[in-house]
Image (cartoon, rainbow, N blue to C red; front, side):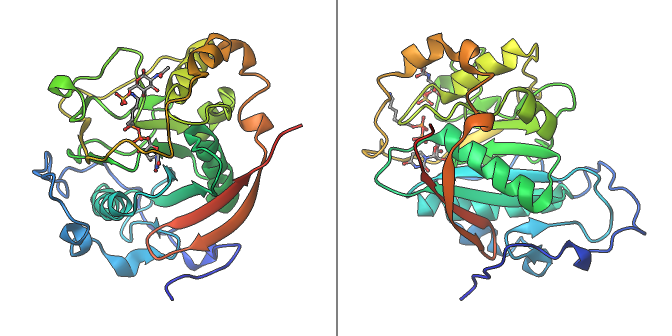
Length: 292
Ligand code: UDH
Ligand code: NGS
């Protein structure tokens, strides 16, 4: 099997101390890609350099050194086609961007309702314990970045919403100014400052707006790239019957800013049931437990 079970990764096998820092270069980039809706994971297989990806989906460029490291965290349940397409697409793009990155897919066991914020927090904690990343990108499984000038890095001063256009919305336009759904990048420090996501949003909706409240309460603003850069293709899917709209989301949001100091990353309660370093990503399975 391609699954390697181990608790630590042997970082010592990387020796990049003699390399020069990676420079931002557009030489390797494609710009706007013409990915269509009938995209398949195999469309990307030939573009990624498998030999350079460590088990767990961790990659470092060979020819230069990156001082930042990025963890892509994908809250996930039952979307295997999307996952395969996204993972292949991301490896191809992130390698062209010469980033030092790892990909973490975080899943929660049934029958508990899906909780994107809690999964993001669990992914953050797991990745932090494995690789002490400097930047975290919380990523929907069904969104493909179409312009590789959309660099998967954090902004040092403010959280960055990497989405400027999304094909799921009318005219691809973001639905409201404060919308930060889909793909959001926070430095490790920013993630701690806002106390992560709320863990209380079970079912669909609101956890991203709650995160926006937290960001605002800490006097951060949201930054975005120019409109033609953060372009995403939304892979079509039916509504998930297992992820119905959360009837409490408006109520939760009303008290969001008051709760943020005590509820979030600091209060998360879960059991890690599995950790697998798969060939193209690290897979984490958690069980929710009631917090006291
Ligand atoms: N996700 C899963 N599996 C699920 C639910 C959510 O993997 O069953 C993850 C996945 O990363 C997804 C993200 O959570 O990209 C966001 O969930 P979503 O794609 O279901 O949300 P979206 O807003 O669609 O794209 C929701 C359709 C139902 C809307 C009902 C409210 N009017
Ligand atoms: C808002 C939701 C957000 C969601 C956004 C876009 O209404 O969580 O719509 O949804 N907020 C609340 O429900 C409080 S979408 O059109 O992508 O399904 O991200």
